[in-house]
Length: 266
Image (cartoon, rainbow, N blue to C red; front, side, top):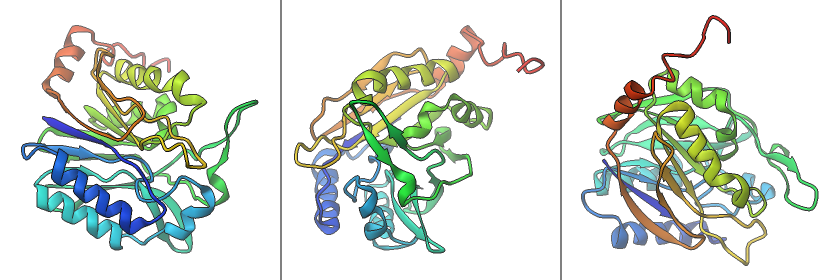
């Protein structure tokens, strides 16, 4: 299974950003790619005040753009996330499309990023976003995959529930910052991979020195042993990683963590 990770830049113009994404696919995503993954808020600057401004309903222009991108390139597309407007509320929403451009999954960020780190990052997503409340696992020709968004990945209970529902790969569009990224990014994706014996795929926006929110970048793929198969630096980049989902069952047989969980105790 070939995965193209798209660590893209974001501009203030949604239309310019989408055209840039289209060009990146044309120039850098191989024809035999099976899954392409985009970052969190890939078409919107990461500022709480801007989420309602850039928000669109399901089926809106960005949704249609992503559907066409998947259909044209005949691949599964984890379309990062975008602000979704629904019933007067704004959600941080991830859509997944199949090779025909059909939506096969939709996930709304469950844990909102409200932090205040002394001498570091301050951010409150809950100022403009509403939290989702559904765990999402979807089927592909390569098996079941789960999806969460950025801060969600810090909560091992959520990853565990996705694995209980059959996930062998966990996708996570994200935008860690310059405080938490250097400390926790690689550690977290490797640990979730080891805990749950899955592949973890974290996809970030590229770092932009001129933006008010500095993304760490470093999009990553880790395997069920916790090995890093691919990790970028901070700049814009497209990288292709090949994985074998059958490795998941092999690892689970050799080191049967999931079988050894004490459900009678915890």
